Length: 244
Image (cartoon, rainbow, N blue to C red; front, side, top):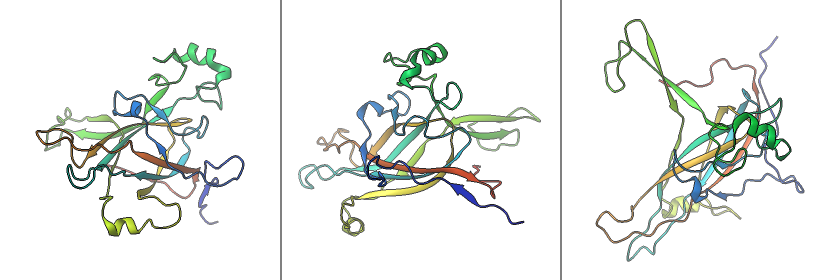
Protein backbone atom coordinates (compact mmCIF):
# COMPACT_ATOMS: atom_id res chain seq x y z
CA UNK A 1 0.00 0.00 0.00
CA UNK A 2 1.59 3.24 -1.13
CA UNK A 3 2.16 6.29 1.02
CA UNK A 4 -0.52 8.93 0.82
CA UNK A 5 0.49 12.24 -0.62
CA UNK A 6 -0.60 15.75 0.18
CA UNK A 7 -4.31 16.53 0.49
CA UNK A 8 -5.05 20.24 0.27
CA UNK A 9 -8.05 22.51 -0.24
CA UNK A 10 -8.65 24.90 -3.09
CA UNK A 11 -6.61 28.09 -3.05
CA UNK A 12 -8.24 30.78 -0.89
CA UNK A 13 -9.48 33.44 -0.62
CA UNK A 14 -11.57 33.78 -3.78
CA UNK A 15 -14.10 36.40 -4.81
CA UNK A 16 -17.60 35.69 -3.56
CA UNK A 17 -19.25 36.50 -6.91
CA UNK A 18 -16.67 35.53 -9.52
CA UNK A 19 -14.78 32.74 -7.76
CA UNK A 20 -11.58 34.31 -9.06
CA UNK A 21 -8.47 34.08 -6.93
CA UNK A 22 -8.11 37.26 -4.87
CA UNK A 23 -4.41 37.87 -5.33
CA UNK A 24 -4.64 41.66 -5.40
CA UNK A 25 -2.37 43.64 -3.11
CA UNK A 26 -3.55 45.48 -0.01
CA UNK A 27 -1.76 48.01 2.18
CA UNK A 28 -0.02 47.19 5.43
CA UNK A 29 -1.44 50.03 7.47
CA UNK A 30 0.73 52.39 9.48
CA UNK A 31 -0.78 51.21 12.78
CA UNK A 32 0.84 47.80 12.20
CA UNK A 33 4.29 49.39 11.84
CA UNK A 34 6.41 48.06 14.69
CA UNK A 35 7.12 44.39 15.28
CA UNK A 36 6.33 44.53 18.99
CA UNK A 37 4.26 47.65 19.57
CA UNK A 38 2.29 47.95 16.34
CA UNK A 39 -1.41 47.16 16.25
CA UNK A 40 -1.95 43.72 14.75
CA UNK A 41 -3.49 43.88 11.27
CA UNK A 42 -5.70 40.89 10.49
CA UNK A 43 -4.94 39.52 7.00
CA UNK A 44 -7.24 36.47 6.85
CA UNK A 45 -10.93 36.04 7.67
CA UNK A 46 -12.02 34.49 10.94
CA UNK A 47 -11.96 30.69 11.00
CA UNK A 48 -9.63 30.47 7.99
CA UNK A 49 -7.58 27.72 9.64
CA UNK A 50 -7.69 25.09 12.35
CA UNK A 51 -4.89 24.57 14.84
CA UNK A 52 -2.42 21.99 13.57
CA UNK A 53 -3.43 22.21 9.93
CA UNK A 54 -0.61 22.56 7.43
CA UNK A 55 -1.01 25.82 5.51
CA UNK A 56 0.73 26.46 2.19
CA UNK A 57 1.11 30.22 1.70
CA UNK A 58 1.88 32.37 -1.32
CA UNK A 59 3.10 35.79 -0.22
CA UNK A 60 3.82 38.72 -2.51
CA UNK A 61 5.33 42.07 -1.50
CA UNK A 62 5.41 45.25 -3.58
CA UNK A 63 8.34 47.60 -3.20
CA UNK A 64 7.19 51.16 -3.90
CA UNK A 65 9.78 53.69 -5.05
CA UNK A 66 9.94 57.28 -3.79
CA UNK A 67 11.99 60.22 -5.03
CA UNK A 68 12.83 61.71 -8.41
CA UNK A 69 16.28 60.19 -8.80
CA UNK A 70 17.84 63.66 -8.78
CA UNK A 71 17.63 65.93 -5.74
CA UNK A 72 17.26 63.23 -3.12
CA UNK A 73 17.74 60.15 -5.30
CA UNK A 74 15.45 57.16 -5.16
CA UNK A 75 14.35 55.38 -2.02
CA UNK A 76 12.76 51.98 -1.48
CA UNK A 77 12.56 49.10 0.97
CA UNK A 78 15.58 46.83 1.21
CA UNK A 79 13.99 44.49 3.78
CA UNK A 80 10.52 43.81 5.14
CA UNK A 81 10.05 41.92 8.42
CA UNK A 82 6.62 40.43 9.07
CA UNK A 83 5.72 39.03 12.47
CA UNK A 84 2.87 36.48 12.33
CA UNK A 85 0.17 36.59 15.01
CA UNK A 86 -2.43 33.83 15.32
CA UNK A 87 -5.99 34.23 16.58
CA UNK A 88 -6.91 31.85 19.38
CA UNK A 89 -10.12 29.83 19.23
CA UNK A 90 -13.00 30.25 21.63
CA UNK A 91 -15.60 27.50 21.83
CA UNK A 92 -15.28 24.59 19.42
CA UNK A 93 -14.79 25.39 15.73
CA UNK A 94 -14.92 29.16 16.25
CA UNK A 95 -12.29 31.83 16.65
CA UNK A 96 -12.60 34.78 18.98
CA UNK A 97 -14.05 37.81 17.20
CA UNK A 98 -17.45 36.64 15.95
CA UNK A 99 -19.83 39.54 16.75
CA UNK A 100 -22.49 37.08 17.90
CA UNK A 101 -20.22 35.91 20.71
CA UNK A 102 -18.64 39.15 21.91
CA UNK A 103 -19.80 38.57 25.47
CA UNK A 104 -18.30 35.09 25.60
CA UNK A 105 -15.04 36.31 24.07
CA UNK A 106 -14.69 39.17 26.54
CA UNK A 107 -15.52 36.85 29.40
CA UNK A 108 -12.77 34.50 28.25
CA UNK A 109 -10.04 36.91 27.12
CA UNK A 110 -11.05 40.36 28.37
CA UNK A 111 -11.45 43.42 26.16
CA UNK A 112 -8.66 44.63 23.92
CA UNK A 113 -7.20 48.14 24.22
CA UNK A 114 -9.64 49.43 21.58
CA UNK A 115 -12.71 48.10 23.36
CA UNK A 116 -13.28 45.28 20.88
CA UNK A 117 -13.02 41.67 21.88
CA UNK A 118 -10.18 40.74 19.52
CA UNK A 119 -8.63 43.93 18.05
CA UNK A 120 -4.96 43.97 19.13
CA UNK A 121 -5.85 41.90 22.20
CA UNK A 122 -2.61 40.18 23.21
CA UNK A 123 -4.62 37.54 25.07
CA UNK A 124 -6.28 36.66 21.75
CA UNK A 125 -3.43 37.17 19.26
CA UNK A 126 -0.40 34.99 20.02
CA UNK A 127 2.88 34.95 18.04
CA UNK A 128 4.28 31.68 16.76
CA UNK A 129 7.50 30.53 18.36
CA UNK A 130 10.70 28.90 17.22
CA UNK A 131 12.77 27.00 19.74
CA UNK A 132 16.55 27.37 19.94
CA UNK A 133 18.09 24.58 22.01
CA UNK A 134 21.18 25.49 24.05
CA UNK A 135 23.26 22.90 25.91
CA UNK A 136 26.28 22.96 28.23
CA UNK A 137 28.49 22.39 25.17
CA UNK A 138 27.71 25.71 23.49
CA UNK A 139 30.92 27.44 22.47
CA UNK A 140 29.63 30.85 21.39
CA UNK A 141 27.83 33.30 23.65
CA UNK A 142 25.32 34.81 23.84
CA UNK A 143 23.15 32.94 24.58
CA UNK A 144 24.65 31.61 27.82
CA UNK A 145 25.31 27.90 28.04
CA UNK A 146 22.85 25.65 29.85
CA UNK A 147 23.59 23.90 33.11
CA UNK A 148 25.26 20.47 32.87
CA UNK A 149 22.98 17.67 31.64
CA UNK A 150 20.24 20.13 30.67
CA UNK A 151 19.05 21.79 27.49
CA UNK A 152 17.56 25.28 27.62
CA UNK A 153 14.82 25.79 25.06
CA UNK A 154 14.92 29.48 24.19
CA UNK A 155 11.46 30.41 22.88
CA UNK A 156 11.87 33.04 20.17
CA UNK A 157 9.10 34.86 18.33
CA UNK A 158 9.17 33.90 14.66
CA UNK A 159 9.59 36.72 12.12
CA UNK A 160 9.47 36.39 8.33
CA UNK A 161 12.30 38.51 6.91
CA UNK A 162 12.31 39.25 3.17
CA UNK A 163 15.25 40.94 1.47
CA UNK A 164 13.90 42.86 -1.52
CA UNK A 165 15.33 43.56 -4.94
CA UNK A 166 16.10 47.00 -6.36
CA UNK A 167 12.75 48.08 -7.84
CA UNK A 168 14.44 50.61 -10.16
CA UNK A 169 16.41 47.89 -11.97
CA UNK A 170 15.18 47.72 -15.58
CA UNK A 171 15.84 43.99 -15.95
CA UNK A 172 13.89 43.24 -12.78
CA UNK A 173 11.01 45.52 -13.82
CA UNK A 174 10.76 43.79 -17.21
CA UNK A 175 9.83 40.53 -15.50
CA UNK A 176 6.48 42.10 -14.51
CA UNK A 177 5.45 43.57 -17.85
CA UNK A 178 2.36 41.35 -18.13
CA UNK A 179 -1.14 42.78 -18.02
CA UNK A 180 -2.02 43.93 -14.52
CA UNK A 181 1.25 42.82 -12.93
CA UNK A 182 3.14 45.02 -10.49
CA UNK A 183 6.80 44.84 -9.52
CA UNK A 184 6.93 42.55 -6.52
CA UNK A 185 8.76 39.73 -4.80
CA UNK A 186 6.97 36.42 -4.26
CA UNK A 187 7.67 33.48 -2.02
CA UNK A 188 5.88 30.27 -1.04
CA UNK A 189 6.25 28.45 2.26
CA UNK A 190 4.47 25.98 4.51
CA UNK A 191 3.49 26.73 8.07
CA UNK A 192 1.55 24.80 10.72
CA UNK A 193 -1.50 26.80 11.74
CA UNK A 194 -1.14 28.16 15.28
CA UNK A 195 -4.63 29.67 15.33
CA UNK A 196 -7.88 30.32 13.49
CA UNK A 197 -6.85 33.51 11.66
CA UNK A 198 -3.60 35.28 10.78
CA UNK A 199 -2.41 38.82 11.46
CA UNK A 200 0.82 40.75 10.96
CA UNK A 201 2.85 43.51 12.48
CA UNK A 202 5.83 44.67 10.46
CA UNK A 203 8.86 46.88 10.15
CA UNK A 204 10.86 47.89 7.10
CA UNK A 205 14.39 48.96 6.30
CA UNK A 206 14.95 51.63 3.64
CA UNK A 207 17.73 52.16 1.14
CA UNK A 208 18.10 55.77 2.29
CA UNK A 209 17.02 56.44 5.85
CA UNK A 210 15.66 60.00 6.29
CA UNK A 211 18.03 62.22 8.25
CA UNK A 212 21.41 60.95 9.44
CA UNK A 213 23.03 64.29 8.61
CA UNK A 214 22.02 64.08 4.95
CA UNK A 215 19.24 65.87 3.05
CA UNK A 216 15.89 64.28 3.97
CA UNK A 217 15.26 61.27 1.78
CA UNK A 218 11.89 60.72 0.18
CA UNK A 219 9.90 58.08 2.07
CA UNK A 220 8.19 55.33 0.08
CA UNK A 221 4.51 54.72 0.56
CA UNK A 222 3.40 51.94 2.89
CA UNK A 223 4.23 48.43 1.72
CA UNK A 224 1.56 46.27 0.13
CA UNK A 225 1.23 42.49 0.31
CA UNK A 226 -0.83 39.77 -1.33
CA UNK A 227 -1.42 36.54 0.56
CA UNK A 228 -3.26 33.40 -0.51
CA UNK A 229 -3.21 29.89 0.90
CA UNK A 230 -4.27 26.25 0.78
CA UNK A 231 -4.99 24.21 3.90
CA UNK A 232 -4.67 20.47 4.33
CA UNK A 233 -2.47 17.63 5.46
CA UNK A 234 0.78 16.05 4.34
CA UNK A 235 0.18 12.36 4.97
CA UNK A 236 3.55 11.23 3.66
CA UNK A 237 5.71 13.75 5.52
CA UNK A 238 7.28 13.09 8.91
CA UNK A 239 9.77 15.96 9.28
CA UNK A 240 8.74 19.16 7.52
CA UNK A 241 11.04 21.87 8.83
CA UNK A 242 13.76 22.39 11.38
CA UNK A 243 16.16 25.10 12.46
CA UNK A 244 19.61 24.75 13.95
